[in-house]
Amino acid sequence: MKRNAIQTALQPAPAWTAILALIAFTGLLSSVGAGKVLNLAFPAGAFAVSILLYLRAPLLYVGFTWWICLLTPLVRRLADYRSGFTDPSPILLTPYLVILVTLVTLKQHLPKAYSQGGLPFLMALAGIFYAILTGLILNPPVKVMISALEWLAPVLFGFHLFTNWHSYPAYRQNLQRTLTWGVLVMGSYGIVQYLIAPEWDRTWLVNTTLYTMGKPEPLGIRVWSTLNSPEPFAAIMAGCLLLLFTNQSPLGLPAAIVGYLSFLLCAVRSGWLGWLAGLLSLIVSLKPKLQLRLAIALVVLALVLVPLATVEPFAQLSSRLDTFSNLENDHSAIERQQNYNALRDSALTSFVGQGMSGQRWDSAILSMLFELGWIGTIGYAGGIAILTSTLCRSDSARFDPFIATARAIVISALVRFPVNVPMLGASGLLLWSFLGIGLAGIKFNRWQHLHAQHF
Image 1 (cartoon, rainbow, N blue to C red):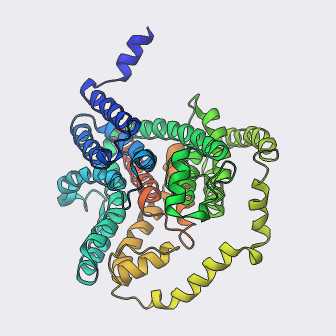
Image 2: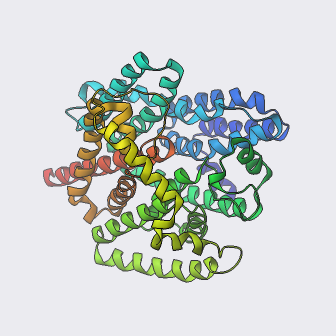
Image 3: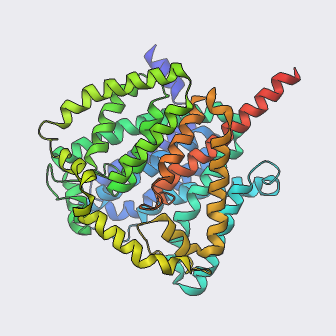
């Protein structure tokens, strides 16, 4: 019986064969120290698998894309561990190559995107393409193209989810299942990373000299789990933990326990505040019955996590929490504020912008104004504003908890715009995925309602 269930789950067979072959191949090369080969083989293999899935198994393609995004930084560290540190690493391009397959979606739906409600996505893409052209004039082409991938990929993936609105229930279920497992895997590995500090993580931290991420020793690391720094890990975990509140999977409770503990261990205050903002949005969006269930879930989690967070080896969490009430003496907050004040006036007068450059700022607002200029920012930020406004104004959230959660996840990202850059890379994939799937849900529910009235 179990064998039949496994065979049923691993369908379509060609797609799963390709996925399992990539996993086995990656594991083999990592274990024998062939990291230099893996540097090129992993991106090429993942790209080939993504094309197959996009054409033959669209739902699997979405889940595969998310797993590639979540696990690629860990693959890079494993590849470098025995073969030597590679910087820049071609492996880190893998998520962008996998998502670029959705350029086919853009090409297919571009002529009718406006009439189908896709104008906000096109506005964002127009702002990005403007910055790419400006960047090619002002900056080195390689830096421009790498930066362009970080900006483009999340928007393309969000647009892909939106255009598949007619299959919204299946895509919703796929995202819920994928990200629930994602929380379980990332949360578990994050705790192991904190307690043990695996050698490949320590080696990578020493080579990068990013000691703001902690010390390369057990109990010294600020958890980043399978990702490449605490900030994107906090962003992803904040969104995924919100998703667990409206997901009735039996994996929900164990995933939440390890997820919240690792979320605390990453010690990213902006991530915690983003989660809180999303939670407040979710509470006011749900029906009373679901509000009660959410309150019970919070109480259960508090009963489990509070004792854990107050005993060794997790007791040092309290020191990071204490900084909320003592920000005037917190060096990180002071430095961030000083940098923002120093750059604010230049950013506000950046009409044309510097174009894509690969340079990064600690604020999404600064990043948009400097790289996109006011010309590109109006399109990009305008697209986000329209999509968010549509999500917030729709009454679909009253009877579809997933849309309410999508809105909460988007809000959790937007409130961090002044102090983080949550629209790029892994963080950006979360934001634009839930903008896309949220709008797809609204469109599907509207179509379903009209269809029911017609009959």
